[in-house]
Amino acid sequence: APLQPPTFTILLETPHQPSSSNSPSTPTLTESRTSKMAGTEYSVLKDKKYENYNTAHAPEGSEASAESITSHLPFYLKTDRQRWTAFCITTVMCALASGPVSAWPTLEPVLMKADLFKGMGQEQMFGAVYSFSIAAQLGVSLPAGWLYDRYGGRFCCFWGALVAAVGLLLMAASVFWPVQCWWAMFLGYPIAMIGGQINTYGIFVFIWILPEHQNFVSSAAGAVTSLSDMLALVAVALSDCCGLFIGTFFLLIAGLSVIAGVVCWAYVPTKQVMLDVAGTYIHADAAAIARSEEEEEACCGAEMLLLREAWKVMRKHAVANSLLLAFSTAYVLSILYPMQEMLYYYRALFPAGEATDLVNLWAVIYGIGGFLCAIAGGALCDKTGIRAFTLIVVGCCMFVVIMLPIPSFAAQIAGQVGITMSLSLYTIVVNRFCMLYASPDLFGTLGGLQFTIISVAMFVCMQALSAVNESLPHQSKATRYQVTFVVCGVVATALGSALAWYWGKHPPPALGDHEPGGMEAVSRDPERV
Image 1 (cartoon, one colour):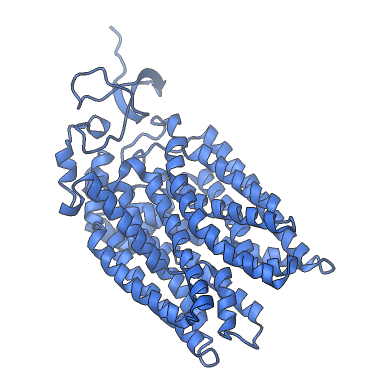
Image 2 (image 1 turned 180 degrees about the vertical axis):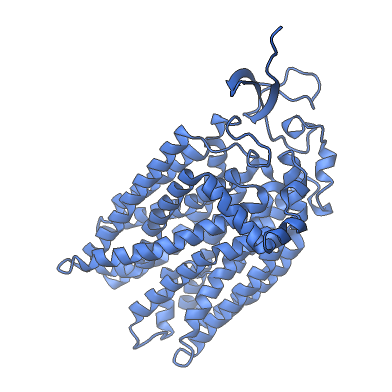
């Protein structure tokens, strides 16, 4: 009889279907099919990857029980309620540590009242501070991601909060002594933003502590930024009604940041706990995920190892990564540039009083709406998959492009809603990309490397935007802003649509397929795309 080719069984991920077996630990098979690849027969079986680990179901048909999984968790994370409680406490603490620094348009009028940069060209100086801070924040994405992968979320939460407190103290000094210490704002504001960014990485630990809600958890990082911006409105309200000086407010927030760091140290799980739980869910030992000391020494240390591995992932998926980077650059420009110039654009369209009302309203819309959009967006991505969700993000960008050029108060409020949705939902796409294309120990480094490249590309594109503005010398200031906004939005829309089209033709790996020995060419689950 002729020799038969060997048969391999590969488990893939699909939505849960009721099991016909009486045993709750028996895997549920929803599809069995056979295909020929290189003369070898593969029997592809689909099974649900994740079950709540408070049940008797085990991921990917393994024999691991709920007890074996929760045994990796500390005593305060043993139950589902305890895990959600720790997650919520961490989210609130990270919002305090992030401070009100992201709501720059709302803070500008208050800082002007404190005579900061008075007589030095306030508009240009405030714009320079914001631009420098955004560049610094994006540039530190790689170190922040590396810190997360190397030392874990607990380390990032604690030390990020302390760094944010230092930045807030410098910001306070700049307004207490605006003549002598104006330069402190150029240092304090970027340091505060960098510290807040590092601090929010602690939330990503809960991606594996609450694995059935991964996109929901990752969206909380964006929700934290939105929630923290509500503090800017508090600063404005206290300044108007109680005469509280903005420098005193910065001091209070600095103290709260230190307290938040201590609380996060108590509640955020360690890196080892996260790797142990992640290894259980992707059916791999934590030692296979974490890089060994021998590997680190062979690759010029842990610093270079994580970076080299992240670069390998980007090269392996070059087309998808390139489209994501191009889309991200245009998209971030289409959102951050209107935010940076918001006050001055409104002053070009409306009287000064209405312009101030709009930037104050922005803090409310972005604070509350951004928080709700980020949380709801994460849950939506869990349901729809990354491709459909990217199209939703592109739709938000198109809406902003339409609204911003319309010179009406109502249209600008609608534009603020669109910017809020765009900024809150976009980060979910990047985080999901890192989850699908990289192993758990490379999540932060891959994202950091991507944002570092985006920051360099943004600098180049900003020069191009300046050239566009200079090419319209006879146009009004409002028109020059509008042309720039539309150009960025249209390019971002086109690139986002191209990325979604590519994912329709070439679905991303199913979660866990990046592990060594995984067969990405076979294990593709279209229902996760």
